[in-house]
Image (tube, rainbow, N blue to C red):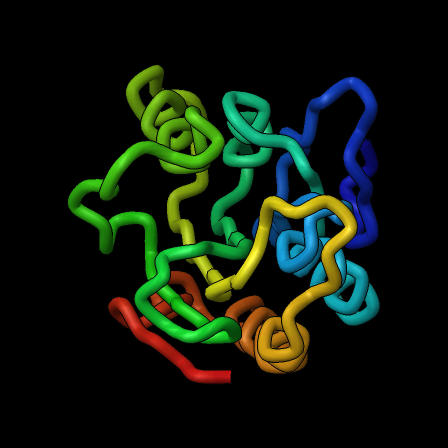
Length: 181
């Protein structure tokens, strides 16, 4: 895989090119609101500088380990279904803001578990991880359209990614924050 800002998922599964910032957009285009990640990635690729790698992937589990390696900063864009906020609500937090995860990951082994494995094995995991997550209505129905509130969150997310890419090291995220789209 090239280290340009317009990289796609490499068929070999390796995304571990060394970069300053990796924007990792997660989601499956076939599953309604879960397609948010690939939509955001397509826009971010248009303005990402050379030191930023933009990756969009439907992969889950330990496949995410590759994407968590060899980047100083990792900005993750994904959907969540917490049921505690209306669709389109944007959450912003660092991986270190969570003491423990409630329940198990819907992917069984998810991003947080992949990061824990990398750190436990002393692999070159991203030093800083910022998560931008949007409350979704439905991420499991094949062929479902995105909820209008989730679609409305896309321009806000794109601006947030742009702002976070240009922020200095250590300044990529405030503590847990909710932003209504």
